Image (cartoon, rainbow, N blue to C red; front, side, top):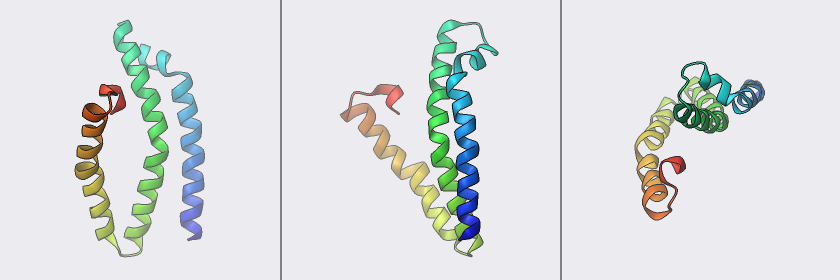
Length: 106
């Protein structure tokens, strides 16, 4: 439990620092790869959203790894099936058909 708490703490600290970096410098970072303003705007928006999602990845991956270390790997399989198949179908349908959020909502 101590290792899990320490891993989560370090993970959140590192993700907080990198997320702040990506959020603040999204436009110049994408601008390194293209000069097309439309691509830069879309890419910067995506980078900001991805930076905010990083906290969820830290939480998910550390906890699934801890469960695997406790000899309970099947829970990780169910989490992955839910995360990659079940939840996207529900969430994508709701965000694009029921609520008018479009692609940005997804």
